[in-house]
Image (cartoon, rainbow, N blue to C red):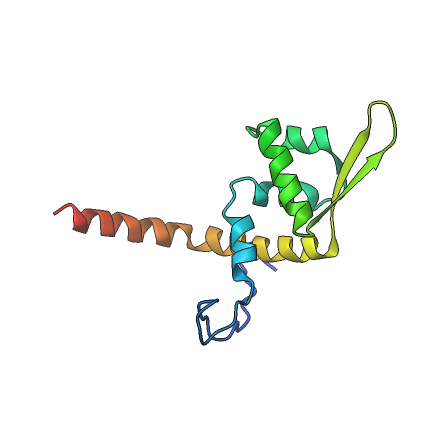
Length: 135
């Protein structure tokens, strides 16, 4: 498949979750992670396979140690990442994606691919809107 190919599947009707006549489908769980700046980059860093904490941290240019720890803990809490500690001195900490995490990363990759294809269209629309609202 080409890099511009997007695997589009019929997702059905998009309805808001948590409305009185529509159960909470869990969309907020995914959006909570996607709304965080470092989640996608951490997922991408773990897709190739398990990585030690410092190795992953070095690959995420600009992330603070605190933000790295928070991001990994949130991903671990949600079941996307597994943390493994080797009882060495100092301890060796390795992170890897779980099956759920790989599945989530696949969905995020589809969104990234869509964004690459539609980026110019979105930017053009924003420019038109901004020009019209300045009048």
